[in-house]
Image (cartoon, rainbow, N blue to C red; front, side, top):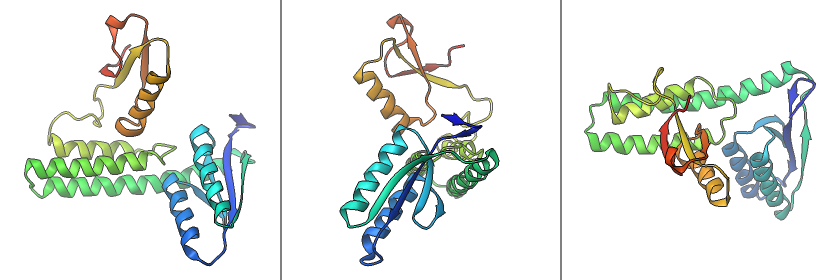
Length: 217
């Protein structure tokens, strides 16, 4: 949702007792996993959508359960410049995480490890990319580089999904979205391909559920 040129953000405000410190540390770690931008002490922000609101509502409930106070606000930055600065700070944080994955992949590739060891490293780094992807709201260029670097562990020197010019892909399923198809789409986006796009076809012969095929023009 846009308002005066800026998007809607969700701002959870919370306060926890200093002692014991365990609940406070636990809440902050959960917020960091969501990729929040810290605006001030006890006030953070995320772009507003159904997922971020739900996740923050759970954390809000947790804060109250351990004796803290919390509330969730929906707001719009006053200016586009303010919103750009906020987005840039979040994008920079994710870029650093992607760069770290790229570096680890490059080191693993340069070390001359055997194929099994490279595949193991690729699985570990892909899991890390999925974790980063769940808190990446602005997709810095380092995202594509990191995916290409991890793909190179499997097929060094080959054609990789993350390369510039690689064939773009979509997922196709039958038209008429039901609970099972919606669930499959959610699982694919969350655990397999964070950038997945879906095509809904009227004729099952032109595409089947959960089968990945070439991009349709």
